[in-house]
Image (cartoon, rainbow, N blue to C red; front, side, top):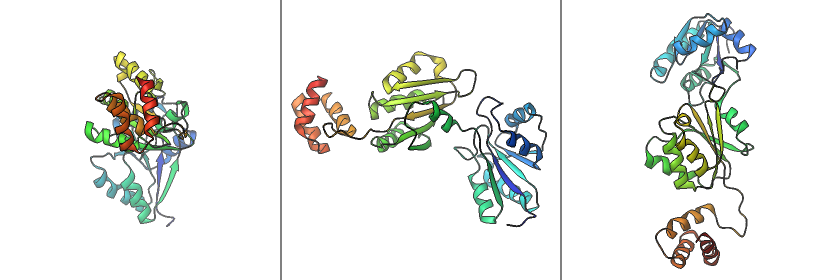
Length: 280
């Protein structure tokens, strides 16, 4: 890497509380030649709060491909640039990937300034296992693709993490109940570090009821954390077999439903019949 080139700094910024920013981030943002921001008006409030006055340029999902060329030129000229998103760590469901990729290919230094992340903050208070988790960003907007995605993840043993918006949180939770079952454990973290921070944890059906009963809990920005499927007890069928059994019991007699569920899933018919009896 050439010493006369600039550095691209990836700077994590607060997800709510403006004081959740590192001393190093404040120093770097005050020293760089330019700040590339997802929303310059929104970011200006953060900068003013910390007494930072540096030239800004917009880099968001609608101009990202065009903006990358201009930022690369600044870096090639020896200017340092800080990339920030509206909140949290850039590139995590936010713009920035094409720019970082281009800098890597051009041999320009990219340096991270770690800090706030809604995903990590939510996991830390979820009460769910965090030794193994998978982050998926936002679920599909349409019901069909959303349910297909959830179905594909239904048997995953690791914790599954999603972002969700206020417009779709109820639809997403209802689909989770339908696809994964009412008893799957979930944590819904809303408006983290903000005035109306709210963390709801419990079986899917109970958390859905909490959100449905309170309009306030349907507003804001959400992180949804689903518990994975626990290791199977040899005396219990798979979660998928139980889901199939539940569906068939709604339409068929008990004996026929358990026999058909066994044929579909490969589980033992006697075991499914016994569990069906308990459900009835």
